Image 1 (cartoon, helix red, strand yellow):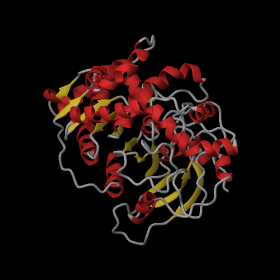
Image 2 (cartoon, rainbow, N blue to C red):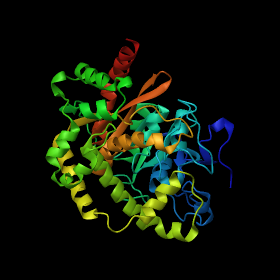
Image 3 (cartoon, helix red, strand yellow):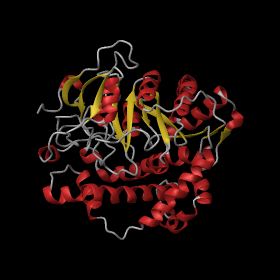
Image 4 (cartoon, helix red, strand yellow):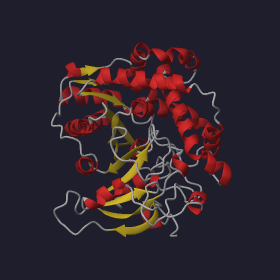
Length: 434
């Protein structure tokens, strides 16, 4: 097996090999190259799942993921598989066994995970697009950290067959690109929904609490997004209500948990802390059902930070209030659907701030992680679609913002992103130079 890492490829690839498309110039992705996260099955190859013990104890895949086949059939050429965080259980992007891919946008900072190599391969110009998966944030976070576009499509619309499951309730196949036109080209192929020609949102919710409490004030993204929507569309459609208050008012079942999160001395939005808690509880229980037997039998060598999380999930008792969690999930989905309706947009920070330094201790990262999951679990728990949009770098570090739309409105979401993108860049330049 080819060893991972290597200077020229920013340590992005697990293994380099070419999967050619059918010979035709007329195909929609003709001429594009792509990379594949090492979680997708490719017939005849062992899918590594980020861990050498997993690779050692699994046979080569019998079939190839339908998403990989669709990209090839549309004319794209695959250049190989990319490094990922072990068992997809991290948003950091560090891998003890295979090395941490180098963040081309911010060397010395983590690339984000678990689709670390896929994001780095795109950011470093090694491929035109790449495939990743996003359960708790594994496309959106590396996209934000590496300064590229990342789409987490609506949950369940893209086949997750022949993709190693993490937690099927949330597992979503997504993709990265350096520009919106490539992202849209790929999306039209891999997500063949009816074409949506609407480009103008009826309402854009830009919740003050998500930006001011969970985001980074230095980035001025709250001002940038408000100014951009007002300029490109109309200030009348902006709604700055706090998302935390909206959830508290419209998701009654969070009542029994909210007290546990209201005493936090660190910056938080308690209602979103509950949403994150619920999502992570459901994720743990599904991960346990999928992988406890393997972990307990093989006793794999797992890297620091991840080991604790994986073992905690495997040990999580049957005393978790899963029925309450499911009720909250259903209520949250319909509340968010009522907020966004058919053509509304929710704008939020993708992540709480710049990517952390490589090798940072877990403790100082705890509040950052908590704020990150408060933001990431909005699309995560609802199953709605989210695109992370790079705004450029400020003080040498990448800044991004995300747009979220209702389930199934993926093409509309990208239409709005295309309409808004240049204005966002102009407003960011203006905000950061003043």
